Length: 116
Image 1: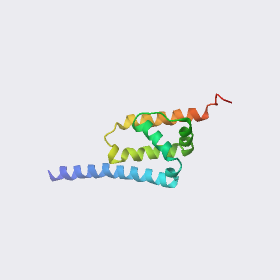
Image 2: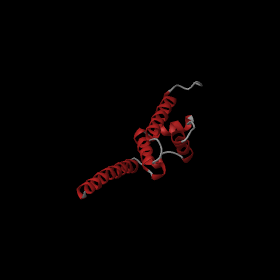
Image 3: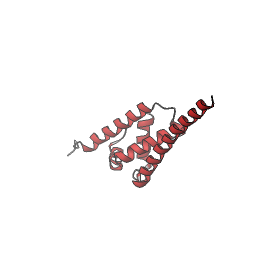
Image 4: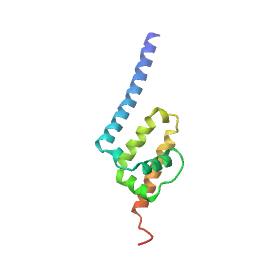
C-alpha cells in the first residue's frame, strides 16, 4: 500500500513539474522577446476577448498582434491558460480560437487594402 502511495506521489510530482517547466518556458519566451511591451492595452484586451470570450479584432489590433509575433502570441496564450483563473476553460477550444485569431489577423494584415 505504501508503494502505491509513493508511486501516486511521484506521478503527481512529475505532472506538476511538467506544468512548472511549461510555465517557466513561456515566461522565459515572454521575457526574452519583451512580449508584454509590444502591444497597447486596448489591443491586448481586444485580442484577449476574441480568444477567451467573444468578439473580433480590428485591423489596427491585428496589425499590432502580427508585429507582436507568433512566438509571443502563443506564449502569452499558454501562460494565460496555465493561470489558475483560466484552468476550467476548454483548452482545445481556446487554443483553436487563438490559432483562428492569429490566422485571421495574418490574412487581414497581408491582404491588399480595398482603398489603394
